[in-house]
Length: 391
Image (cartoon, rainbow, N blue to C red):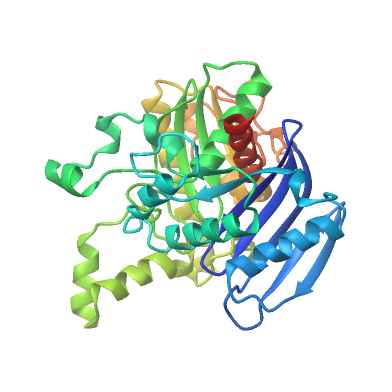
């Protein structure tokens, strides 16, 4: 069965076609600057990267390009060979605890969550409407970043604020990166041939979150009402005192909205050392840049503290997994994190840790908790969920 996956942003869109249940990727691509000057996209097929400069005024035009590429590159002979389309949606609130077939009623429900994800859900919903025009004969599935986390109990997902903020306005922890954490739990459970694992999944990239999972169910996760909280990230601060917002607004003579923009887009590692990309930070560390050294230390400590907290929450984890851009590729960051959790009996095998982007055990044989690196694959998880719903 061939599944097309779509992951849309306000001016971008990633896509892939997967052969499911085999999990074979036939093609993938990335559209950038949709609706802006200088739009383009890249396609990868059979190990080859193809660049296309294309005027793209909206997502429907991008989807029409996908249709053309699939036929011209012989991914399919005709579009009827695409069996279904899976869409990533950032927010499903409490309503959607699992992936779901997209209907008009589902779309209307998702519109209610726009206030909870104003930067993401509108673009993703617009892309679904465009996809219905581009692929009118294919069933479509919504896969929510928040749904995997809906097994948390109230003691973990509620904030200690007036309870009617939750009942009236939905103020609670929702969690994000759920598709990635679900994939990681699936892969490590399959690898160790256990469905009762206590897993600490560390999705550490530019955006980052930690997730405590027990027997396939989320116990707790670091991101909260928004993706801003939890651990320090590339441009987001993680956990900070909320009174900072009004204090800085008053001191700077600016608005709360402008301070929130600074927190979302110019904080985290960038706020400390002026760099959000871990590769640039590592280069700065090698050059002796004290602020890069500081940013890296802050980053590793905060991740380690969440890992330790979730080890306690799980009453002892069976396995720790590092994933996403930094977790998969930065041996230095992996080492820094593990050095900060030695109190848990975790030990790094530095020789095993000397690699990028593979599924690998990096802890020693006598490490109290084994540590794995597993490349995440959200597109495959979207395709698998889509397959399960329509097969």
